[in-house]
Amino acid sequence: MTSRTLRLSALDTWFFRESRPHGSVGGTELDSVFPPPPRTVAGAVRTMIGNHAGADWDDFKKCKETPYLRNEIDLRAEIGWGDDTGKLAINGPWLTLNGSRLYPAPSFLVKSENSGVVRLAIGPSAVCDLGCLHLPILGTGSSVKPIENAWLTHEAFNRVLGGGVPDIADILCESQLVAIEPRLGIARNNAVRTAENGMLYQARHIRPDAKFALEVDISGIAERLHPSGGATRFGGEGRLALVESLPTSPLFPQPPEPLADTKGVILILLTPSDTGGCWLPNSSFKLIEEDGVCYFDGKINGIGLRIVSAVLGKAIREGGWDLAQQKPRPARSLIPAGSAWYCTVAGGDIKSAIQALHNSQIGLETSLGRGHLAVGLWNNSEYPDTSRRGI
Image (cartoon, rainbow, N blue to C red):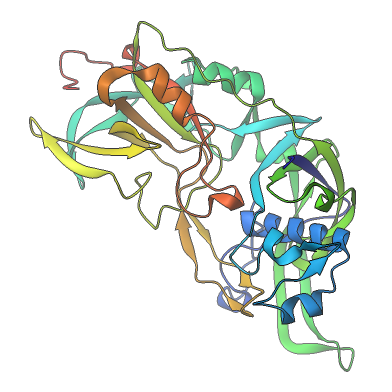
């Protein structure tokens, strides 16, 4: 099975509604989520695949338990139904600028007034609500601000994985990629072609820059089902996106080579992860205590890891509409992209751990592109007080 990349460019504004329903906000504007939720992207991709195959969607919905054949291919087995994506696997969505992919700025990067961009360090153990833990601290002691809603160029992200920091010019904030456009709307009664009383609403659309696009890698389906491109409706209000079908780029952030100074690895989320409402990567991680300090031991892809500390962003609330069941989805909390876990490796084989974990996925619904991981180096130089670190 071949892999293809679909590049979506905006022909209008886009709107990806936040998890709150229209009726819950009163006079407050509904924000647009950026980047769009994976289910929104998956819906557009499955629609494009079905249209390319010549699907009659009314017939497709009626044949829930039976094959739906198009050109001797069971389309239902290929793209699934409802929450089941069938054979289809999606990676992304990836943000691009001028055709080059961007990656979320890790949450351990902060802007310093005196030193540009610096990395947080892992400090001595301290008591908090989870017990006695090693918490992230600022090693330099200068005033800093977090870097939020920002992305790094490919080269800068590779530098971060190797233990370095990006230049300020390598950091792209949301305002450099999309502009916000407030909109005022009212619900319509299409049967009589009149406005609905009391159904006025406000929303914040996004207008992507002309050089900006979204890319999504799709694989697993039969080669002849891959859409050739064109235009599709995308997101809320069915705004148009131009779609190009491209060969999937082999370019991905490079796995770093461990150094003599390397203590462990940093697991960095490239896409939000659904871990069932827990802040840990999966349910195998259990709390242990050594010398009065708490750690979390578990496994990912067969690699034994000890989580010493973590820098996590604000939880993302994701809901949406279930088209298959015709009802709202319950809102869930996801770990945002850019979040990072600092881990030591059982047995000390850091190189093998990087090979097993880099470019892998964690959590639920990985076929939608959730939980994509990159692995960076965690070096001894990121301990500000070696006499007290207790690791």
